[in-house]
Image 1 (cartoon, rainbow, N blue to C red):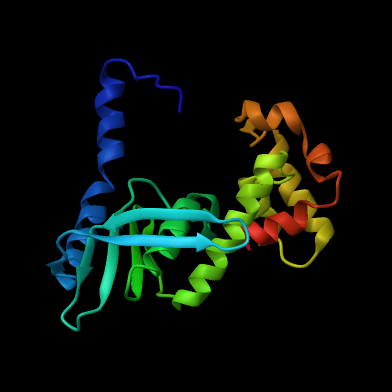
Image 2 (tube, rainbow, N blue to C red):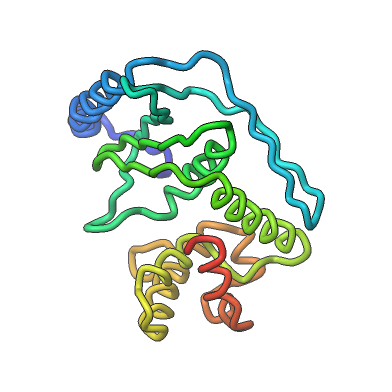
Length: 219
């Protein structure tokens, strides 16, 4: 994570260790390319208006593929791992989820397939109105974030939500992820912006809004 390279023979060993999972990863990616055999040329326009604020979200999204039934999919090769133990690295899915929402507003239902070292994750198509509603919620949160630093952090929020309905356990898990511990860098320490405003989980949760924002943004 710090850009340090191994010395001498350790470099060859590290290279073999890093390249070992690539064969399986590329094999699964080729299987998906074969199933979604037809590449769609060009890009599709995304245009979404957040009516309460007048904020407009516009983009051109491409790289879609079709299968023999004419269904559409966005196939993405992810170099890292999306799974963590028996669950997912939810914080790694955030940007993929936003793109997935946008794809639903491009004229046809689209599934997103994320092929990673730890497996393939499929995000099923959503109804366009459902995608619009979720994008509206994200834009509303973004606008509020322009007014003040929101008392929420991605990894801590995912830990909170993953703990279930036990709020004490949820708080412990979120604090562990945010504050870090022996040999583990916390989310706050990895972000000068977070550290400046919310140096520890106690300050992050002090307003009592953390749980609501975690649910609104990542639930």
